[in-house]
Length: 60
Image (cartoon, rainbow, N blue to C red; front, side, top):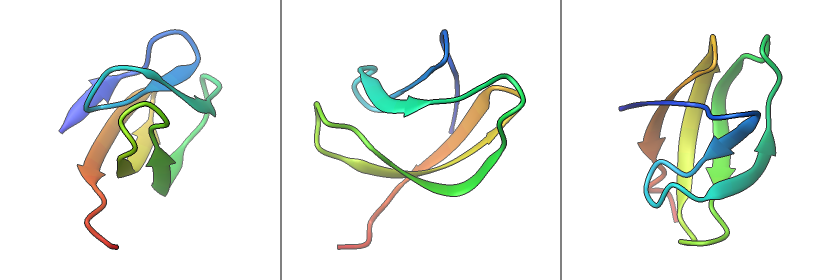
């Protein structure tokens, strides 16, 4: 699934809340673990050209 970053904050793909992760315009991430403090879910994300591709982290 894909999501677009608003402002400089990465938004939670599930609930849409701000996460604690900021990126710059030229930031590229691959297999980055993202945690949402609001819904308490983990995601694995890839970021390129300010577009986020994500999947739910099922490891526990």
